[in-house]
Length: 390
Image (cartoon, rainbow, N blue to C red; front, side, top):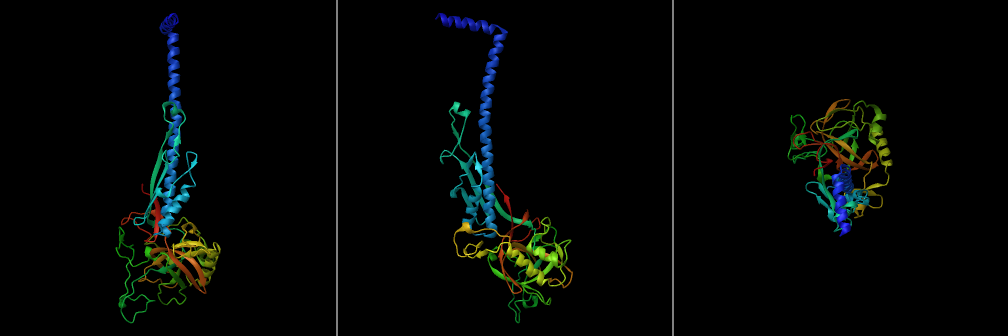
């Protein structure tokens, strides 16, 4: 009791002394400040992990949506791509553990949703440091993202040859299926009416669409320059480009990726049929990835020998996939250097060369410049741009 009494007397003397009071205030402040700093370290760590989780979800969702451009009905490939990209990232120092059940694929709207989670339920929550003093040893974190393959407003790296857009063949007789003949009932409805302001989009265009992805076709040189055939290609020149050397290089590679093309854009035809430079350019293009082949079952590109595989992990991209412009078959380009207008675009996978013909597949393609349907000029049904919507 004497010790306690002496302690109280000392406390009263110290508290009545200004120096003693300052000492107590300083000690209390330091304790509070240390506690706040300690908690700030935990909070900062958790916020960083939350940002990393969001980055994982974003990148994985975009990768999944990207698979729906070239293979629109392949939910397995979309899921696989999302999981692949998620596994390349870290959350709080651990490889992101995104599961199949964390990926949702909406084929109708071309959307992929990904959840990136670290939780107690999964056995990988975020551990704390100083918050343990308050009984908080672990914290669950997570993030969600939805990406969409939506309409693209433009495209870059076009092949320097154009094809007539598809028309509906009439039943009139005689009617040559290789020639557009409105008198025999042939009908062409473009994806968009480029001459209107704002652009008017047609509900039932006759051009190539998503249902054509994977279909094989043959591109032929229009050497006769005397008719219109759905498979005949017409050379054209990008701005500031001319001649056989530029043309061949434009076939095999993208000379100027900064130039964006869209529906309604006018270009000029390249004089001559350019048959030789076309074949040389396509041979150069095929040589960039000689083992790429088409898999009909999965509508995707795989390595040679895997044409009949059902494993989506074998699907891959290829430099042999390039975009190609279309023109209105009612307005066939004239011979020589004459202007004509793009009315649609399609992606093509160059399969091979037979004589003077190029064997290819219609394919979806990732474009640029997101567009609002019915408001901005679009690149057409086969061209999509990837964007986060949630």
